[in-house]
Image (cartoon, rainbow, N blue to C red; front, side):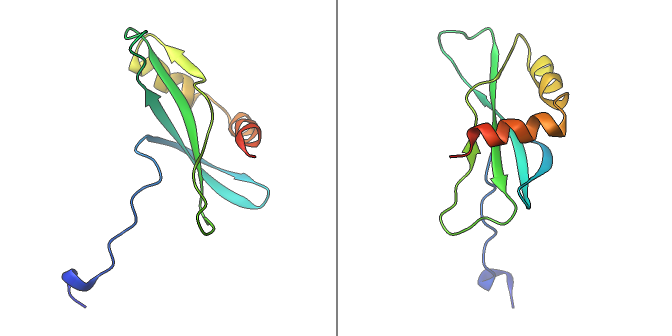
Length: 98
């Protein structure tokens, strides 16, 4: 099979920064940090968590929290997100699921 006939890879579920992979109710979920621009507050870095299952079902989409990280610098926001423990990431996923 040549390169022109290969199926393209699906796009990544998030353009954010991959933080972790956690398990919840027998499934693995990739966790991404996504930054949101707020023109009313250009001096802050606001971010939310995006969760995507490792085994997505038909038409299953990513699950997102509301903005939960607000810091003065990009680096501080990344440090805050990376400091979250798996149990905290799992709890935030539970709160975002329908």
